[in-house]
Length: 56
Figure 1 (cartoon, rainbow, N blue to C red):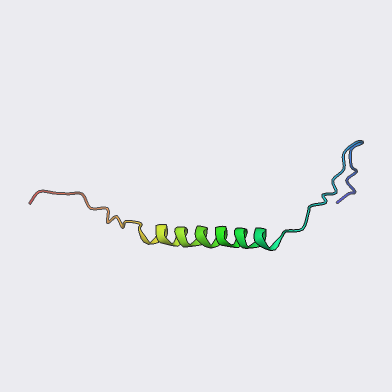
Figure 2 (figure 1 turned 45 degrees about the horizontal axis):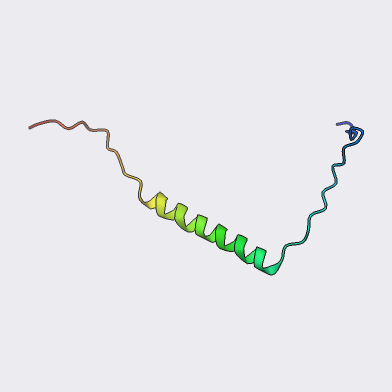
């Protein structure tokens, strides 16, 4: 694997601001809600047997 040069005029260094406690809590709550909703959806899947309705 070789060395990859940065193109002229492009900087790949990202300086982001640190998260505040409020931001961390908001993100944690969003993730918890997402996981809770995905578990609820997983439980509601119907099971198909592959049988066709046949009049007896």
